[in-house]
Length: 214
Image (cartoon, rainbow, N blue to C red; front, side, top):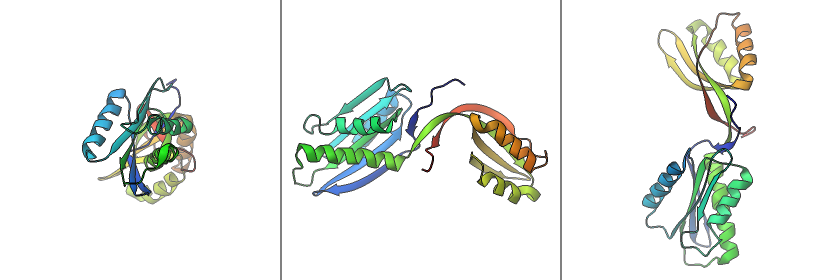
């Protein structure tokens, strides 16, 4: 799967703060298409229809081919541009950020607005989490109950995501592993289980993985 690695958001997230009595709420969401980004913007405008401003920016495409932003009534260049500059600085794409403002009666000035909306964008990215898209393999791994604790202990230190764990007469794990880590992981699994565990590779996809240390 020869696809370009790129950074995006891991999940929906929001964070809020107060500056000189104005309430700011930064929202972030992964978006695969421009239509997804516009739907997110519409959702936020509806949810915060009583807000003074819902300023936004979004970047779409592995090569960041689509970039849009809006000041939504704030003075030109003080809201949308700072938001997208924070996104570009973090290198994220296929995502959207909306920073909502409830005016508190104190004017912030152009410089204050730029700082506030930059802070709002950074808060949104922090809440949503930044990850890198990697070619990823998804596996189903069936484990008998006598080996359950051993398997749990082994997987805890492996570079895999345990997406699901279903209990029936056996335990079935749904695992995601980066294709780059796949062969080494399978070798360690076979060694740990003395060849008794043979996971089923069910699909290959592109998945966002948290940044190292995140």
